Length: 93
Length: 93
Ligand code: FES
Ligand code: FES
Image: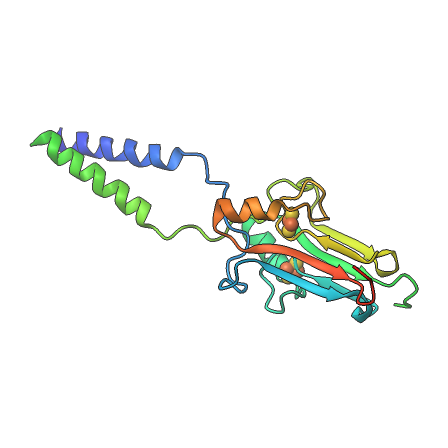
């Protein structure tokens, strides 16, 4: 009965702890320039080519550019993020 | 001794559970167009004004534009994210 009682109490304690709603206040950026207070990228519009994708998932190895890493992130977390795509209308693709 | 032993075991169990490394695989986007498989925004370069900031924290009420919400997000989570700023060099500010 002692072991049973202890097991029950441990089980209830752990379940209660797990049962807390997941913490929603989590960082978005895990790795990019974490030594910087705020990562702001400035881009001159005149320098933009015909088409360029900018990362918004913070998982790209080419940040601030998108390298497709959002797909793995979405699969792993159930997220639905993707890049900002800047393109020139008159560009022939 | 019974209560003491139980308390100790509960304490150790909860600490062990808390001690696990925090789950890093969390979504970035909590609210923006969650009914969409992947949120990709396409912008025509010709339509850009002299300066515009695009959100990368997914907390803006004006998404895909930045409305400054990254600051609250950073404060609440210890994160360091900020917008992508597109600007025209020759624009007189
Ligand atoms: S790699 Fe981050 S949005 Fe594509
Ligand atoms: S509000 Fe999201 S980056 Fe500014």
